[in-house]
Every structure is written in C-alpha cells, then in structure tokens.
Image (cartoon, rainbow, N blue to C red; front, side):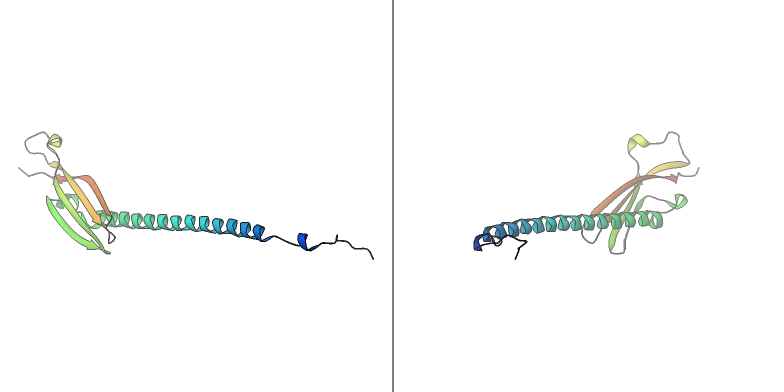
Length: 136
C-alpha cells in the first residue's frame, strides 16, 4: 500500500522538552506583561475617577455654598459634602488690586475654595467675585 505521510522514527516524532520550555517561558513573559499593563490602566482609571469626583464637588460647592454677589462678605465657612470636606475663604484682593475712588460701589474679593477628598487629595480653586462696597 501507498502511505501519504513519511515514516517517522522516535527522534523526529514531536517537540523536544527544550522547545516546550521555551514556548512556556515566552507565554509566561507575555502574560506578565499583559497583567502589568492592566494594573497600570486600572490605577490610572481610579486616579481619574477620584479627580473627576473632586472637581464635581468643587463645582457643586461653588454653585451652592458661595454666596450670591449681593450677599457676599469677607469671612470663612466650611462644611462637608459626600464625604469631601470643604472650606471657603473670602477676603480682599491684594493691595495692587485696590479700586480707585473714595467709595466704590463694587469691590473685588478673592474667593478661595479648598476641597479635600476622603483619600486626602486636595483641590484649591481661587476666583474673584465682586461684592458691594460700603454705601455712602
């Protein structure tokens, strides 16, 4: 009869143990590299989520807890929102920002908003708001 495959002896019948070990080593290195990339990505995503949550808290504090222009006054206030501690300090601008005139109707005030997350990250935002000057 005619055979389609050539005959094999014991020496050419499969992979050697060295070839199998090399293939397993390459596979192990690949799996470790993929795991490293995945853990780095997971840490990055967690960090971004915390930053976004912190920024959302800053925005909500600015919208809800900074007094409107007609009611703004120098001083400090603090509180807690969704586990984030916040503090608002409202004070005068620096000496260079003084408004000319004896009795201006509006004066600039520096508003500093500091929010601390439960993990300890801090966001410090500063803005300027106009407040009513003293009436004559």
